[in-house]
Length: 227
Image (cartoon, rainbow, N blue to C red; front, side, top):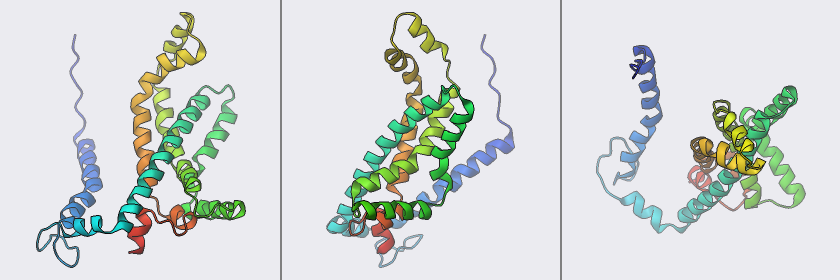
C-alpha cells in the first residue's frame, strides 16, 4: 500500500527556495559579468565578448596558479576524506563516549578557530622545519580544514545506518575488513563523495593559509586577491 507523501509547510518551502536563491545569486551575477567586453566588469555588461577569457588563457601566471590550486585541492580533499572517514567510523564505534567526544572536539577545532590563528601556527611550524613555500605543508593544512566537515557528513550517515548489516556479514564468515568494505562502506558512498567535493572546494577557495605558507608560489585565490 502506497502512503501519500507529506507536503512540506509553505513557510519551510519558501525558506528553502530563499536560501537556494541567496546561494546562487553571486553565480548568476558573476557568470554574465565574465562575458563583458568592457574595460571594467559591470552588471549588467554594456557589451558582450570573450575578452577576459582570452586574457586569462594568454597569461601563464593565471594558468599556473589555477593548476596549482587544482593540484593542492585534489590532494587535500583525498587526504581529508580518507582520514575523516576513518575517524568518523572510529568515533562512532568508540567504547568510551566521553573520550570519543573529546577527540571529536579536537577534530572539529579547525572549523571553529579563526583561520588566521591556525595559519600563523602552521607558518611558524613550517619555518621551524624549513618547509616554507612547500606545497605538501599547504596540502596538510587544507586537509586539516576539510576534515571536520568530512567528519560531520560521514558521521551523520553512519548514525543513520543499520549496524546489523555488518554483523550479518560477520556471521556469514566475512572478516572485519571484508565485512566493513562489503556491508558498511557501500551505503556510505554518497556521504563520502559529498565530503570529497566539500573538502575540494574548501581547499580550492582558501586564501589565508596560502598567503602564510606558500610564499612565492601563488595559488588562484592569492592571484585573484593580489591582482
